[in-house]
Length: 624
Image (cartoon, rainbow, N blue to C red; front, side, top):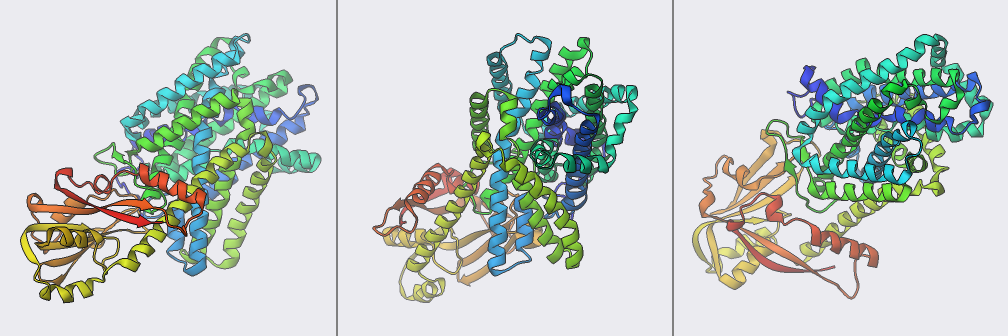
């Protein structure tokens, strides 16, 4: 399986720097708060050397097991023609399943996608708040209200620049992240040199001993340890932007070493001065460097938000193409990289969600309680789907599959269970957001299925229409008429309405059906098929991958065997309006959600990139 953008899937320096700018901001800024949150469970004066070693061991092996082994080594290999993310993985798994298993895998994918959006709202909030709160180390009198206001300004500015595209953002942010990882690695190394013994925490026995010694308290602390690996899912979700090779290389040889050095450097600082446990990251810097470090941290946390934002755009387009969400605007921000997009509606919703979290929780310490449930839930969903793909698609033996992914699942469930303990302290927020998005997806999917069923009951079969046509004495007028239809075996309602009111049929009629494949990009051989159903009447099937934006006019122009003149072509659409039936097919809440999404969907003409001056719309009422 190859990446969607072969030019990006190389180890050229600009690609590597761009990947650093887009992909690693989230996990790269975890040192700001991960160890600090873990140490918050202890009294600074009662901290034992073995406890610090145990925490460092748990963090280090979380990075190795969850990120290096699970995501970078195994999950990223299970790409869907170069694309990553839980929905791409679900589509790959569904291709090897049938019946109930296929439906269950689809539901897991939807749940994982919803949780990913929930994580995408909280990551920018906690990252930016953590960085800006570093000012309180320099100026202890600085109020939380000023930190909150400054964080809001930073976040709003971040979402405003998204329209420039991930390529431009990555190009600008990449060099900053290079400086960031070099800085935190060097900062950690200076303290490791003063106490090399801290590296003993790499031994996993310290982590196991910590778990055995503290029992349930250690399980609770796992909810803080997982903060070190938040952002792992973004590595997979953003794979289509840069390719597998650059992401693997930058993680293995640059990001992981820098993070390891910094965490163990923070540990050395706390060993030397237990009071530094209050904020080990900023207190590991000399006083003269603390303000520059706050500035660099703020820039890095802006980039941290970029990882989940760009991943949210990719996920949003997949949801639209797979029929899980209504049509939304997709803007391409690069002429060379198909995966680099901007979705205004997704951007606005994320911005509002992040601002609401900052105004509600006020500080990064409060947000730490809310963090983790959504991201660990996504870990579990991805693990289950990857297990199925390795067993059914890669044909791994069942014992090997269970041994490898069963081990990962134990770790994921431990992290998820530990975070569930924070449910009433704010953990319900990202979980609720994720479940709400999942509910919207299932509602839209179910509502569209009901509409299709209702339409099929009233529609005329194409074969019956063609058989009757020679005896109908319908007048044929010059030009080409394109009728969009969801089922090529039935006559579109717009055509029947046109015949009823205008009494004419164009000399060339195209019934065009657009299908979304379970792969990111359709090949030229898969793109289109043309069948002449009757003289002057053609069935056209256009196939697009779930990472593509369908351009119907351009595709029809390139269709072999069809002399297509755009200037003499009219596109006929049925403008759907929904009326409530006395026995509704959807429950009250689902019906309201569906109607709200339908009203806010962009027009089909815009989604299929059809010129507005070539469109004829006919009203169609549908009962739900």
